[in-house]
Image 1 (cartoon, helix red, strand yellow):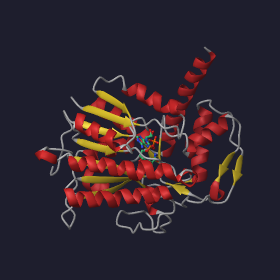
Image 2 (cartoon, protein in one colour):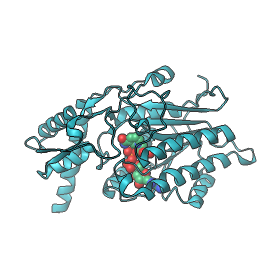
Image 3 (spheres, protein in one colour):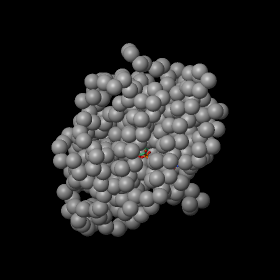
Image 4 (cartoon, helix red, strand yellow):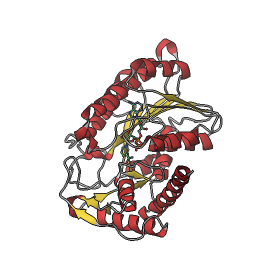
Length: 354
Ligand SMILES: NC(=O)c1ccc[n+]([C@@H]2O[C@H](COP(=O)([O-])OP(=O)(O)OC[C@H]3O[C@@H](n4cnc5c(N)ncnc54)[C@H](O)[C@@H]3O)[C@@H](O)[C@H]2O)c1
């Protein structure tokens, strides 16, 4: 296959390695690829419960070919030292300040991680070719479905215009795609951006609805349903995301019409689910795992600033170029999540009793 990269024996730098997607990616590579070296960087910030990041890292630290560096990608010298020491073949940039609503409360965090940090990584990719070195063969980075803003046309296609972000988070992600394009054009860095759609699963992010609703339900608190429940999300199970990322990592993008090694893909389930079906399914899975006994009390509220009505991924390009389409049903994925939640929190409770 043209542009194919064999991952065997390669050094992969993953930023945001203690994060939800980063840790799952690192684990999958360490388990499945021979002789691979995975270098992870994460600043372990406390945007959400750090014990989850530590739990994910503990699993990764069991592999002798995993190296973890606690550091900030917004620190130029730190990033440079990592590139100098490890000379990564592939860089997967997942470190970011995520979340749409938090960008109203703490905009600085988005500028620091998503813009300054992203820029530092690209600068190091650029200089990885200095003095005739082989350098970075592929730069893969997380974008987001949020770049589609309030676009009305569905499913969302990477051909659609995405110039109207409705949150700072979305604006930083769209900026990442623009900056990556400029760097691919100027310095020939093969870059692929991935617009992820509402990723969920075991050991996921507690700021996301499936997890924060669960925590509230466990405490017997009511859950807040925005836009009176009239919203749709293309929920994508973590394993599908990881399968997609690993496939993408192994193939550099074809040149655009203008000769730039650059591409952006959607990775989503291609099946939007209504918020109310999502809540019912979550409740069903939590009840069957014995995590809660009854359905939650609900408070129906108007739309939140920065939120969008629906997300829905067109994944034709992913299918065309990689023969892959995410397909895990919401019920199956949430069942896996509920199982993990029960085990994880029962372990924590046992420890607290000890
Ligand atoms: N989970 C989703 O639904 C989703 C959807 C669309 C896009 N994304 C994107 O995918 C990527 C991974 O998301 P996730 O869900 O795993 O989030 P996450 O918050 O679990 O992971 C991101 C990690 O990056 C780290 N980080 C943040 N700023 C950093 C910095 N300056 N230096 C070093 N580390 C830093 C955090 O500590 C965290 O562990 C992010 O870029 C996110 O914007 C996620």
